[in-house]
Every structure is written in structure tokens, then in C-alpha cells.
Amino acid sequence: MPKRIFATLACAALASEEVEFDAGLSLLQTRAQKIDIDQQPTYFTKGMGEVCDHGEDLTLAQCLEVQYTKKDVPNGEIEPWGILPNSRSHSGWKMPKGCFMAKSTRMAWNDQPLGFPVRHYRPICSKQGGREAEIASQGSSCKEPTCAENPLDQRLNWEGDGVVVPEFEVGELGAVCDPSACLLNYAQCAKAGDTAMFEVSGYNARVTGALKEFKYQPTFETAGHTQLRPGSPSGCYTGPNYAQFSPYDTPDGALAGPGGTPLVSDSGVGVGYKQYRPICGVCPTTTTPPPPPPPPVDEPEGDAAAAVADPHMATNTGKHYTLSDA
Image 1 (cartoon, one colour):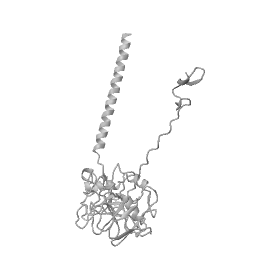
Image 2: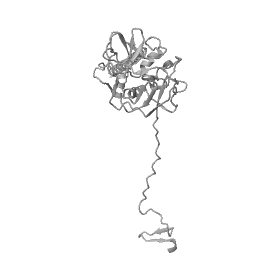
Image 3: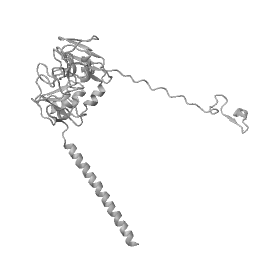
Image 4: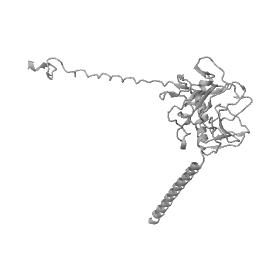
């Protein structure tokens, strides 16, 4: 009997050691996998003429992070007059989707929901790419199913409610928005331009309800005449011929500052330039209603105190009388 018990205990101890060994091995494997994941680059490029796998296309904020910080993907210097060409496809010039790079290592961006493998360009991708989800939430689509049929009208349709353009005002030439204004993000600026919520004609811009054909989608530019950054209003603004956009002080520039910090200007609204009019969103005002009054407290019957002839008493037979009656 003692030998059998000892043998059982020995088997139990061996089994316990095996469980501990398996748990330790699993922990080591988990740590090794985590180290491997941590060491993998956030961004990477595919070959010329390839496309990102599904779910790997970059958002604009991610593309700007690569452009500004050179994170994981060495690329060319930013042009002195702008930062990132915005290149939509058309019948004579097809483009990859999202963020991509040319042979010269110059980067560009295409906000259309479709793109093409082009032998002159290599896409920039990420396992954490968020462009697919972004497109689904924005409700944008091309006017033609292929996104590449009309060379003169490259506007997008904005059919969903995912992008809500706030009420806005067009500022004066050389001005910037008030710091209390709500700056438009890129998608709002693109929707406003594509649907002709404002028009651009020379140096004049005004809010309009009439449809106007735009040959160019918003381009990205943050340098004015001095070529210093920022040299333009932050967010959405109008240039001499078309809408323009600066990611400074907007969610689209949230990763493009030093070390992946937000891209911000000293003023919080950028810098004015004589040829630019800022598009200043009117922030919605919300008022908090006063709290409702507390509900009345229902008192049990027979428990209310009498206002007259107090104090009062009752006998065990239910007869009521006051002290004056006693």
C-alpha cells in the first residue's frame, strides 16, 4: 500500500512538473512572439506595381507620419512649397490607393476608395492600416465605378453620413480662423470641395449652394511665400484655384510631429498668407438642460400628521381624541 501511494504521488508530481514546464514554455513562446511583433516595423513598402493586402492601406494620418518622421520607410525630402501631392486617378493617369511612393522616393496620397497596381509606384502598407475602415465609415465613392474614367471631373460622391461638414465661414485673404473655431479635417474639406459647398475663383471664395465643377481635389500645402512651415492656415482653406489643406492642428496631423506627436502650430490655427482664405467651422453650441425636479414622495395613508388638535391619540378600539379630551 505505501508503495502504491508513493507511486501515485510520484506520478502526480511528474504530471505537475509537466504542467509547469508546459506553462513555462507557453510563456516563453508568448514572450518570443511579443518580441518578434515589437521588432517588426510598423510601416513597409511593397514592390513596384504591387498593392497592399486587404486591411493594410494607410490612413492619411499614418501616411503623414511616414512622410514627416521617415518612420520605417526612408523617403525623399518634403518639397519646399508643399508636403504631399494628392493624386486621384483618371483615365490617363492611374494611381495606387492610399499612401504610395514613386521611384524618386517622393511620396503621394490618393483618397479614392479604389486604386491600381502601377509599375512606377510602390505602395506603403501597415499591418495596422486603417484606410478600409475609414472608407467604410466615410461613405465616399467614385463617380464612375472604376474611379478612372473622367479626366476632368475627379470629384468623389459622399453618399453616407460618415462625414458631417459643420457650418462654416470663409475668412478674409491673409486671415486665420479664430482659435475657438472648429477646424475642418481632411475628409470634411474634401467633401466640401467635391460637393461645391464653397467655390474658388481667383482669390475669391464664398459659400454657395450651386454646383461647380472642380478640376482638383484638395491638395496638401503648409508653406506660403516664405516657405516656412506652417506658412498657411491650419485645416481647410482656399488657394487661388482650388481647395487646399494643412494637417497642422487637425486629427490628420496627430502622428506627424516629432516622435509621432501631434503636428501643431504656435497659434493653434496656422499662419495667414495673402493668397489664402481660411475655412472656419462654426463649433456647435451645446447647452446642458437643468436637472428635472425630484419626484414627489408618496406618503402612506394614515401616516400624515394632523395640523389641528395635536397631539392626538387613538384607543385600541380606534377612537381618536386629543389631550384636551382626556
